[in-house]
Length: 476
Length: 92
Image 1: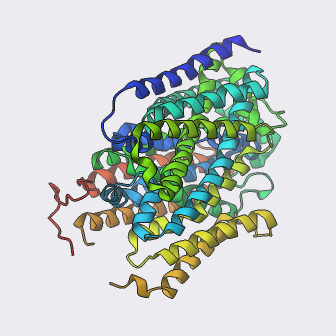
Image 2: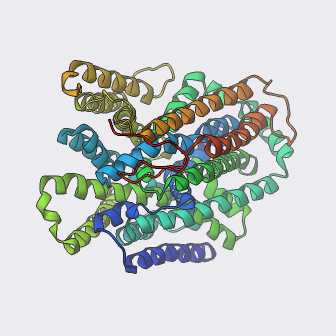
Image 3: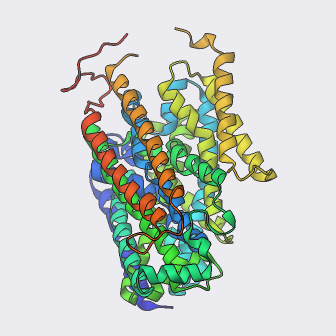
């Protein structure tokens, strides 16, 4: 075990807990649910940008992404830059309308908005359950990433790392709620940014400059410096699928969408778009480029996912390595806390309180049980993450795409299409989700297209069918 | 449901989508048009410098301009339709 790396890392985790405790101890205006799940809609532009970015950028951008870049070369950086529009697209499209409606309905979760728009309990149940399942998968992958990171960089055994790391996230999310999470996200966003820039600089230095690194890469395989990657892996259908999966589809991710109802005012949204886009651009480019150039420094990794931690240990002095190990940890924690909170919100607000509306009478009881559920969910994840699989990014994208197939159309069409109705939304969610699961299991040959593309198409067709079959109910 | 803020919101949503499509176009042109072996200024290939550095920088600037000049500040409160910059709307 490497003490010099572990100490700054533990200090960092303690800071996260400290922030949550501070938020917990502060007295807050408004009801418990409003505060715990969306921080009473008080985010300013900077925090909004950071939390959107941090929620969106997960283990896949810090571990899996650079790992794939290591394997496929500069073409993967090109692919990662597809994500540049994510912030302006999700804030811009959901935008002010979503925010105004959420305030009008006093909505705390995505399901509240969907219920208010479509007036259907079925929708809440479908969306709630698919959200819980997908988040569970996604969070497990994130925890695995975190624990593996600790294992590679510090030599802490996988199980111990998992306990320390996942325990911290569970505790600080349960204590701090939304406000604690987004504050931690903001800190983590800054850490990620600094960490990514410094690591890239150190890697370029260790590779003997960019031209030298390019010569090394060309010597390994000239395809590493082409936009197509070795064996033409990054084909047109592949790239086009990613435009859907990591750019347009992101509008439909519930944990990013909920951040679009929690900002203070339109000025916060405007500043959020600007800051968020800049930070996302810088992080995507630097982290993935680091993965590519890393191959010129360490060319013999068998598990590509280990490239970032391995580089940290190799090119940074130990104490710095500890501090910057915090960056990918931050990426993971900030994603998990958002999803954990959303899962708890779904369980309590959308499912439990909808079945038993009178249970909300006591605020104290509500507060204790919500925090307890958040914490227990965290523990369940640790159990699930005990046996880890190999290629992280694909598993994560699996959960990611499933959510999009379920939520994208009901959200977007619900907002902007007056004739959208409950039947359409239900059909869209069911067909999209089913299609996604079936394609995942059957693995048919889709000529290189990612399964999210047919799933979203089916889901759209489902929506239109529902709207046109049951149009009477929607006439004015 | 013709809150004028919703008309604004729809326009802003369309603008965001349009900017995204413009980004895809330039990203693709710069990535796949240049000869892939041409070196750029920094030692990285030219296609990479154009599509992963230059185009993103340009579109960050465009996003800033879009938000500054085409997006309108409005109140988000539930029953408040008034803004400083836009004319008042009425519920239908």
